[in-house]
Length: 214
Figure (cartoon, rainbow, N blue to C red):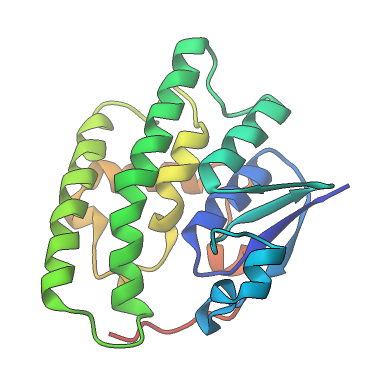
């Protein structure tokens, strides 16, 4: 039975899971979640799909999983791929997943959403605060990638899929040019595009593309 992945095309967190599934050669169906029109805030959706009001949601038969880090870990364990090649590597993968969820993706995703899709022009003070956190988190990873191809070990892992998820979207959506600001990150993203199974998020995930607003 194929997996069902609930999400929408602008969601880098959903794309992290789609990238992993495709890289693992696992078939899946997609279920469109109309996040932009507020469906995840409705009581019915939260009661029936995810009480946290977030995507991605992955159905594996009767099992339902939420939170991208949990889903990626589950898939790596189940299929024996991209989870790290040793106990120490698996711990390091987990370390990067926590860093991603708390800082790396967290700040960048909020910044991009406010700039590209927010209902009103973003507050410069808020954007400045977020940009400072982005620069710090991106700087940490850019330094870590100096002289190495992937985050953990010498091959891609779910840590790479997780941290890169939002970086495959057009620079116009965030206004951040990685090649100019963090060249090691930009080179890493290019390497990940070459991983078998990678695809453009707007082609892989359901939902219409939306032009940046601000």
